Length: 114
Length: 112
Image 1: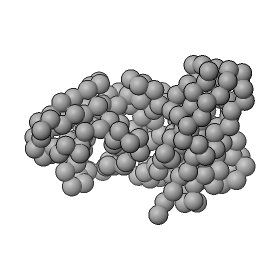
Image 2 (image 1 turned 120 degrees about the vertical axis):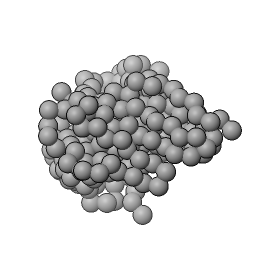
Image 3 (image 1 turned 135 degrees about the vertical axis):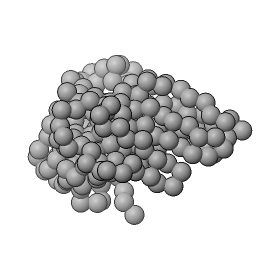
């Protein structure tokens, strides 16, 4: 069974902390994505990666960075957490570039920055 | 720039009736894919249906069908014979140039 696992379901961090959100997939997918989900705004793409060590900015990359050292793992980093980064974060993975390749999602991490 | 728009924040439908959820998109790429996902209150994202830009036929998956009008850049989801379990958020998504972007979502409530 395909699986995308996010390291935490809930996280509370303090303003200014460096925060790591981890995502691991076991499907040997080339593409991985990080989104944040806010009410009324849907899912907004932060970063995506199409191969190891490769990354592309999404629509809202400011305040975030990513790391993909291994194919199965894609990390989202909040360099200095702020209260406006309180949100639900979703990780997804899919096969390379095929338009028909559906994305598989993790269970989400609800991050609260206080 | 690519864009997906869902203009219906919330919809109500009577059980056993059909409902259409709207989605329009914008891209300059001739090759792209369109998806619909369902997100129940549990939060999981469930893939429902896919339509490729070159597909001649509208996609169907059980009670779900996609009304694809390429010239109008619309990809509406039609759910036939609504069930109480269809109450959820529904997201339209588009994939081109590797990116996968989503719309704002529509919250569907099915009334008994």
